[in-house]
Length: 317
Image 1 (cartoon, rainbow, N blue to C red):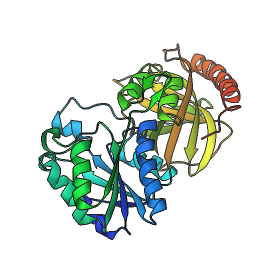
Image 2: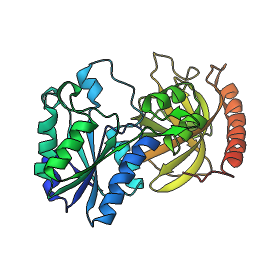
Image 3: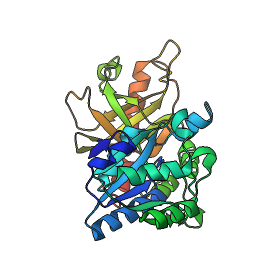
Image 4: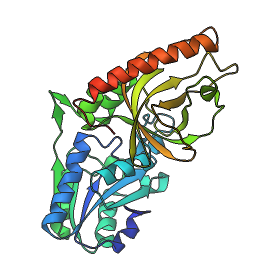
């Protein structure tokens, strides 16, 4: 995937350019419809579909300290978009200066940058520009005048529930992965880079990959049956998301550590995309390492059972 740093870089993309515009946190079913519309236009007109997104999340700039916990970082988002077949994306920096751009000036900047701009796809209720003055009607009027098509994708629903990043965050927050999966249209995953830890898991016979987590919205602390994608390879395993009360003597921070079944090797510095399938148990403190080791043995057996059952009907990631 070619990642462009700002709207001005769109001039390097072969036109007509079909833009899918949005924050796309989570890249859920609704976002996928916006993206699919741009891909269809590009395919029909021998053009290029480009996703235009923003970093950081606009609400973190417009309402400092009150922005949402993100379902995926920009880096994770780009990985998911690539899985959807996107070959070009723009990650436009969003700051106070950009937030002050008037809606018509924003549209004009897109038209000026693309060679040419053929199509824009957005969510029907999407607002943009200074003070959110721009909407789908303004965008359609501008498209008529400037010569590009516009499609506002209506709200997508699953079993009567509108798909939204907010609804997915709430599902993840309580550990309802089934609902999160239904709204996302894919597995809920956590991305992190594998970093060196204290190697305590190795000492008790269960080596773990410690992740520097990029995802902000996480489920409750606990032990989970998981799959993990590392270097394009899929693995099964068990993970602990929590504060390790048995091992940590000082004030601890939330960590995700994954024990991969039937694997031996050095993964330091690699990215791991972890799918949390189902909670095995809540996190709790044990009376020493031997009791912890015995419980981990039971956790591994239960995680294997869960994964065998789950993966009968769902492909491993």
